[in-house]
Length: 447
Image 1 (spheres, rainbow, N blue to C red):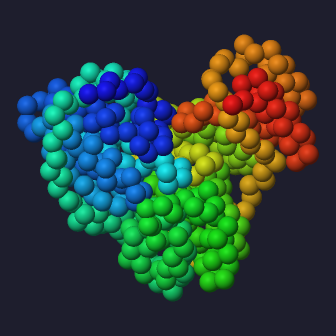
Image 2: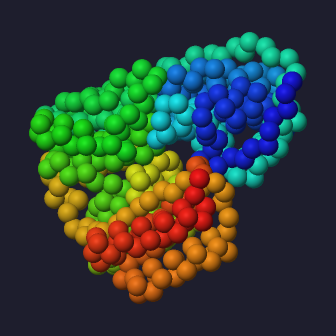
Image 3: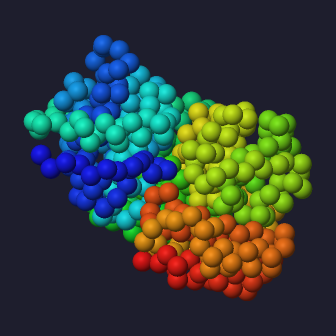
């Protein structure tokens, strides 16, 4: 067989164009074999892996390739079918599977796909284990490809729904309208069903996946249609998921879009006032708006800042015993929900917090600094500080901000891009400084 080229896991699993390395059948068979070997090291009993997917056309052959590799290691495979990443993660733990694999490229377009691997605890696989998988996959590609036996376990999703019902025993949405945009992805069937189980009148937006329309002008990246639906139907809340449902962006009853910073501000203030916020602290990444820090500081809450990625928020929350954390992009983690990012759970938590009140009123109070964000395609990821033109542009921007704003320049963990983010006191300064640094990056490293 053709050798598998070397590859690495990114900050959120393995991701790329479906059919091309590393998301090609040969590499995925190798990953399946490697995962099987890692699992078999922990004991002699037969190991079990649970799969799920977000509805992309490529999900079927990707699952089959992974299962071929796992089958070579004598690992049993079961499939949830269309589901969200948090549902899979929770069920891996509660149903005592040895690992879980979500076939999803999250917010990426339909032609991409990826895999997220979960340990038996329901937590994302440790980076050291991912590195070991990448190493073993090259050496362990099965010589004989056999048709795998994959057991369908769609009924397990009902148990996840029961878990949500148990988490909100007093939530009654009878007489209230909720709009749900599932990005034509993993939550398209699950999310409306759960909301209706609490008595809500549900308006479905982008809940009709066809394999090619996931994230297409909808979902957490494009909540404009959801905002219009909330206004036209007089809904109390709109919930926009990303493709695999681990992120949530929300629309209040006045039609205003609310992101992860808004959610952290809402619960940070409310839980602090109620004495429910351990250490008077929440976790957020460097991408959170400076306005969040100042809004929470006003009520005595500090922000523990982490690197980008919900994995980093998770680690900080676990290490410091925090109850709440998240990302501006919509990953919000609650300790009471096993630190699993879950857009639907966050929406239910917001609805429970609101009671019969107004979402617009509950979200009020966060004054944002104007923010500009640019993603610059790069041909390679060199040390930014080692490139004089980029270093000079960054230093000039930081001098002008002089403490009344922020500049962040970093590489994406999943794409060949450099992110440039600027916050300043006014939009004109924000845009100008962001453009200046982004241009310097593009001139030196641009593809």
